[in-house]
Image (cartoon, rainbow, N blue to C red; front, side, top):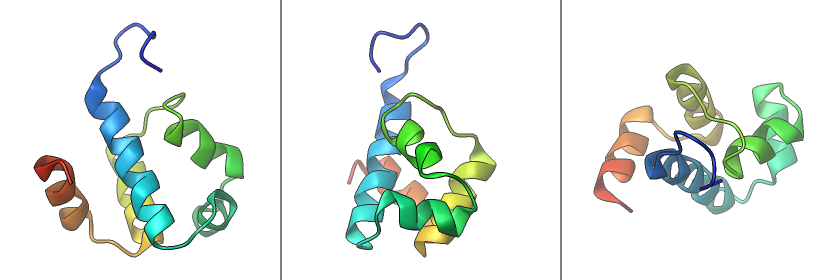
Length: 80
């Protein structure tokens, strides 16, 4: 993840925070993927840093996880 050109640690933080929230919701990758109508590999790729998410995708993932986007942003900005 860190060896890619243009890697920004903030992208890794987004992925790590989404993973943390998913695990806190006691969801497997496949469970979240089903809610998003994607394959499990979609979740795996963004959680591993292989794939970056755009704003709309983050919003959709937050909705599927049952967290408000504003709460996600707050957690991201606070580093929690």
